[in-house]
Length: 136
Image 1 (tube, helix red, strand yellow):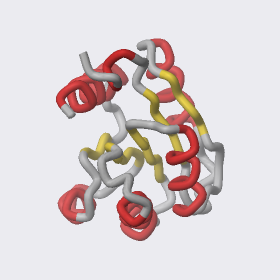
Image 2 (cartoon, helix red, strand yellow; image 1 turned 135 degrees about the vertical axis):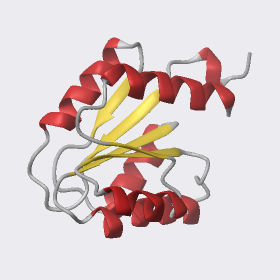
Image 3 (tube, rainbow, N blue to C red; image 1 turned 180 degrees about the vertical axis):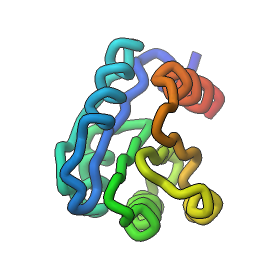
Image 4 (tube, rainbow, N blue to C red; image 1 turned 90 degrees about the vertical axis):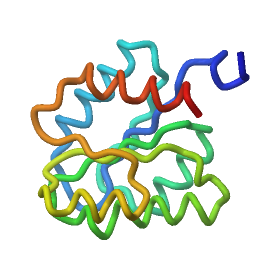
């Protein structure tokens, strides 16, 4: 087993931008904890730079971004770019929230691995993370 598989998966759940609604992010954070992952929740109104720094400091394997404000096309790619600039481009970045279907390919092209919309089962997110982190 590799070193990464010997420890729990570490996930940073973050709310970039001015979005003040975090119920979904808290639900996901709790579900990931219940699944045995270590979860760090940054709280509301984080800049992409703050999220990148938290991801580096916490040594996470996954950053899960949540946005309901419509600023995802600006904020999500900025987190991916920030991680790449810091040499942490291998961190899996996921997005969730209210993301229009037409924006999903744009976000994936920008480096977001997957987008999970409203109604996604927490088990779907958990299984996706486990599969992707173990296969890295």
